[in-house]
Length: 118
Length: 111
Image 1: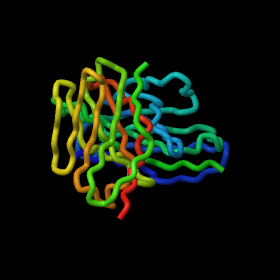
Image 2: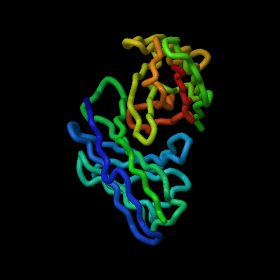
Image 3: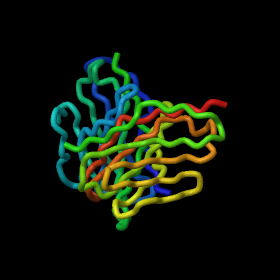
């Protein structure tokens, strides 16, 4: 089945530093990738939609200058949390939509990245 | 905007059936999904159903859709301790729209 990987799985950083999270579709091409954020014991909150070769579309309330998204290829999207602060600590999950899967809209989720900002 | 509601907790005995319910508000929802999330892990797609279907069965999982009432349910037969997890209901209207998730139902299976 389709596999989406995220790297790193866990990161701890100091306040003020930037952190890059990678999301890769391993065995399929993904024209669209989505970035979600999950707070403890809560649902997933969509942050942005990333289309290959174009600028990401951010949800209301998400700072585009703080959460930089790059979708440079059909298999890779990156999320960079710039000047991270403790309130950015969260579980970040990406998902990718299989370009070739025409008959059902399925998004495959990565395993998530737990970010802790000290 | 769209809204997806689920009950937050469900506790069942091992071997019994579990039924997790979900309601949604968007009448243009085309795809409805059930995801499973184990502690500290990402989401695993369990099953999905198109809005023109009433039922879908896949081994121990049965999904029922009542489009008139905008109600979706997931039945897990012969629930096992390994089924303990959070189950998210989600919907989308098209292939290029993101998923709208419910808050998740935490299923606890008692041995």
